[in-house]
Length: 261
Image 1 (cartoon, helix red, strand yellow):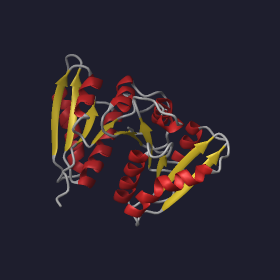
Image 2 (cartoon, helix red, strand yellow):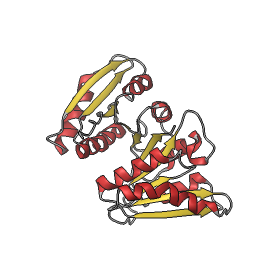
Image 3 (cartoon, helix red, strand yellow):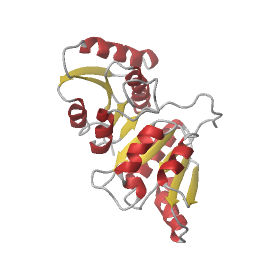
Image 4 (cartoon, one colour):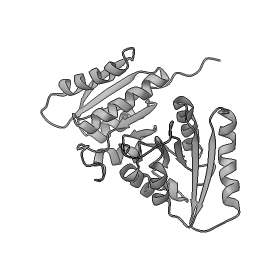
């Protein structure tokens, strides 16, 4: 059976340092999957889109010379234009905000809207603390909420870990101790662990914690944190937009928001 071809990796750029860091991340993702990279700049007024696009494309090709890179300029609302691309993209990649010198400030409105409304996974670049001693390779962290609704995020985390030669840490958080928590987490992860037997897995259930601080702390030692994102809410903490939004602002590594059913 022939594998279904992946859609492209799409990265939004605006000329900022944060966007260029997103280009680096997007180019790595596209090269790892042998899929094209599409660089998009949305004009909201007079400006030189071509220069912004050329700089971004040259940066991607400098690190990945064989990568298929195309550029496109669109006029209009940036969030709406990027959301339209999410219909046929494998992955959207964005910077956290225009000014990368202040990563602790909240994400910009375009990033926030796209993360919560995109039809494909959205990866947001977040800087890693260069002073922190980290294991190598760092793990991929995934927040697991109610199963089976969390399955798309778990699948994405295992795929990422396999590509990166990393392990997976599956984290489930509950305010109080319940006997079924560990069983649920094991059931949620076991099928994907079987599909990726070469990916080491660590299960972590934390009681007496809130989702945001637990995930934020664990992300400091990860290379990627995967959370669910849904426009329709959800019964568990990881499915709610509040946690996804917080991780985009607080994580100690890039964040992948995966649409949930």
